Length: 156
Image 1 (cartoon, rainbow, N blue to C red):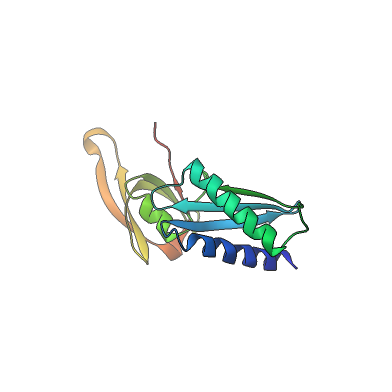
Image 2 (spheres, rainbow, N blue to C red):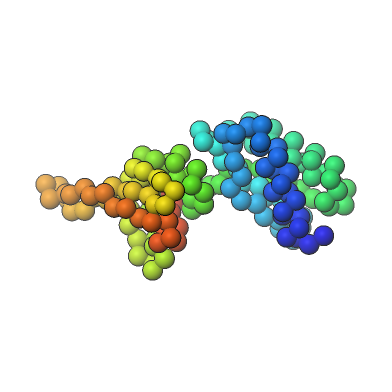
């Protein structure tokens, strides 16, 4: 079985497992050469460590039962994408409304602002330019096809 076939089958198992828990969703998965399977999940209201452990145990059993790897010759990590990971799915944009984001456009330019809306075609951010009394806030509509990456920015 090729890695592509393994990825497709594990994705199907993961989506099947999540079908009973609609607030959680698969963001991405990959298999490292050492048969280390990394599954990145997220939830509309976040993903707790307890839920990661729960999904890890359930998915490990499913992968093992389906014989995708020789017995005992794989490892599984289930986690949420780190805060430094770019947003990949529309549901991630929706759950991050109100947060500061950095958008890198397909041409390499950047904009930073508060994510205020996400539709099927675009996002809207509030960008602040200038300082003090000259500060101006404007809404910027950004079509998804112009976005290379969007990353949530941590504020202290």
